[in-house]
Image 1 (spheres, rainbow, N blue to C red):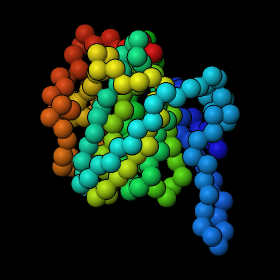
Image 2: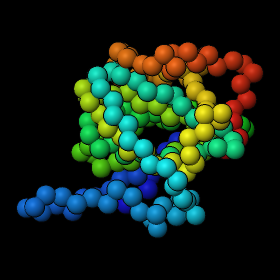
Image 3: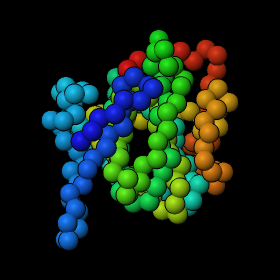
Length: 183
């Protein structure tokens, strides 16, 4: 595993190298020992599978606040997505900055998103499947979200948004009073 830093502190791109031979390929998707360089004592409590249909479909931007703030490890198992993380950490020098990367079934990349970030993605194929590992269980009372089209974020989504949920469309735009979240 190769751990790459991004412009947002704590957000890491993870690249893996598959072993290939005449039988096919073998890829280690996750290694707790190697991720200790990013986060000693990292422990995941929940694993989810997201299946999304329709080119241009958008999910997010979602986050959980304390006391259920969560870190996420995300890998694309099928298709391709434009994956976005937004820094919401109070007093962070990159507050409300975003970083995106393409995750795809064949590019051997994953992303580690620390607590205090919102996350979302847009499908770049007709179908996409993402594996999510979370450090805290989903807690509806701690859930929050940002609009994908919020002008304060100005995320450059690669495609026109074709589908999103009513919930994701209902999030308010970021107000000038928004101070972020505790990580």
